[in-house]
Length: 127
Image 1: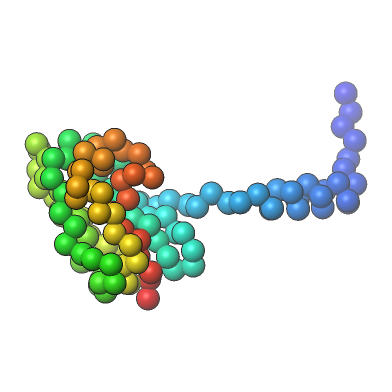
Image 2: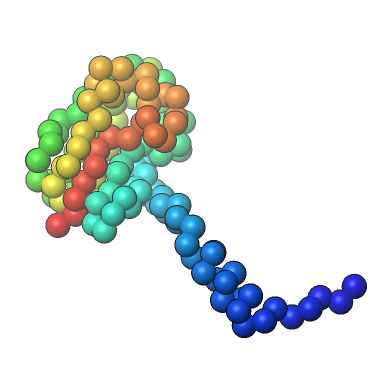
């Protein structure tokens, strides 16, 4: 069976429909923290799957930061305690904290479920 070449208009229409779909935000991982760009310079951060596997079930979480705090790259953003270890996680970027996930402090077991929408730590506006 022979395929017919697409016309210019068919290719243009295909390109337009392909580009008009909303792009899924890319997620990168650095030092056990996943980063998802939300808007230009605005990131959501959480614990990566690998970090969660190494730590084990988390029983305590402490967020030493608050909304509007200004962080330098390498500042602590979350301390967790599990049956295996106590671990501090750091921000890979400097910026201002836009939002903090207070539910993690109230219920640290939320992180153990490893569901990205639930295990985010903070949102940061990079300077």
